[in-house]
Figure 1 (cartoon, helix red, strand yellow):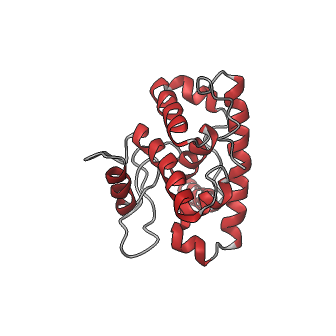
Figure 2 (cartoon, one colour):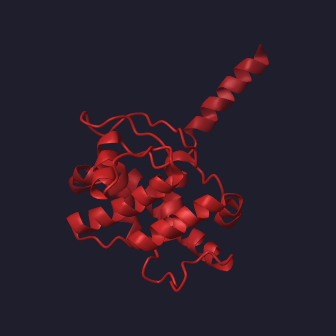
Length: 192
């Protein structure tokens, strides 16, 4: 009985800790999942968003779990966040329509990484903030455009800054294992 109590208390302790990256080695992750590697490369080239930025968002939002479920939506008009990208249904449907797709699951990795790149690009067009600026784009991703414009709380800004460093680390590591888009030196897409 004490073991059950200890495990429950330990579980609560772990749940209160800040989220840590599932993996520090994106090269190994992509080597184990060649289809994912191609999807990330394609999304990065299509949307001019660094692979490290895309992978960092997916890692932070779902820990690379296809069926991850969020706590809920930012506003009452949105549906529960779900899938690799933790996209709400309203924004997901906007993405599908905007990219000419008739359907697609939020649990599909290739579509999810494409969604992240599309989101950064779409918000660049709407806000004028270059998609290479990870911190504001992650805040827009997490808080919504309206929430970002109202002002991000300090803890959200701190998290976004930490994630920017992680995205840069992933981009450097990905270059060492030969994960680079053909003919792309990564300069244009690097997060900052």
